[in-house]
Length: 496
Image (cartoon, rainbow, N blue to C red; front, top):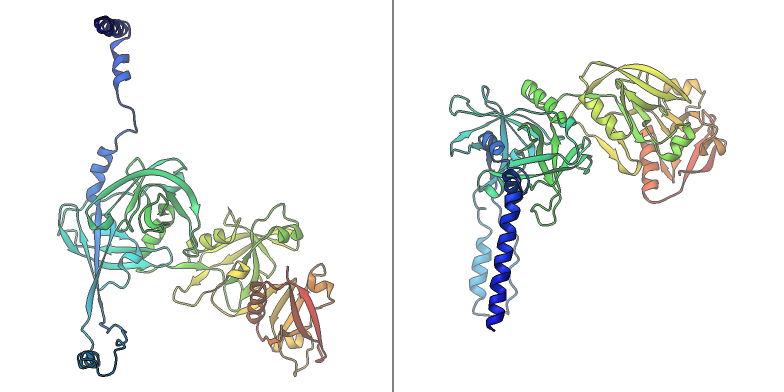
């Protein structure tokens, strides 16, 4: 036993001597590096300078009172409780309770200290009767709504800049951000006060089907309830995103959050500050994606561009500059690869300005100049998901479907094709001979009167009916066609 203790002490002495010898040989700086704990650099200094610019948005709303629709309990006849329950539920016929106040919380940030301008999400302040801004030092100010955009989910607020010493932050370039770059989110989750989280950019250009202009930055920086409307910073302390949505089955962060990129937000914010509303450009066309099959039939090297399925009657391009069947490849020098590219570019282009488009028309690339109108945000905008397209407001003058160009049957087209007055429907003005319609012998001057035993009278009716059949998984469409003199026949045209 004693021998074992002696051996143990000798081993410890040898180990200590070896460590001392090593430190004597290794330079002091290297020894300090070996002992320093490793990990990501601290962001404390960066956060400290930004926290005061991030605010809590508190809203309240008066909601009309209503009695809960609770049926009376079923009790046996003659029960001693019968009188009690009868009196209780009969009293419910009296006046409803008064209005109650509903409160909600979100985040925002100051972008102009001189003017008192604060940015947040539209859904944070939607339907609010009162808006208050709570600062990190405990100060609270009433806020005025300057403007909001439901499509992008942005809102601009204004507080009295004289009532509080404001700290503003600047927007950065979201286009410069790369996947893997560090970002910092600051907000007010759960109403507990300012909170800082750090993560990386997980992805860019995310489409989460929340609207027509989806183009989100995805981050794993924790974003929770109450973070909506707060800023997403780069490591230079610049706002490169506005936190707006998360994917989570529980409502808490699972590392999938989305922010509106500053490149998209800045233009909207400028318009809201200037006009109190967003003024978007409008082409006045029905659009659909170019599939691989369509690209091959048109001679494109790959599926790219946006196919024009119809032109809105009286719209900006109802002058022959854009035709059904055209494929838009570029808009003002920017490539158009898919439908949402065109939507965003057009919406970002000034109303009334001229734009130069490169289109593929009958196998040839040509350049056309168009003048944009204004998309009325309060108008009905129909979307045909089964076609993957978008029908902008207005009645279609012409449309392209199943290899046919169709148009309204009016006095002009009736005279052009010498169609009898007793024929009604939608006139076919052009047929691609290599299409399914061309294979069936359908020609210009034929009139579509019914599709699948339902009458049609406008180009939009035809598109809607075809879209419905496609959505039902049908492969063919049964068309009732009328000749110019009124002779009827049926043709089955494949839709794939």
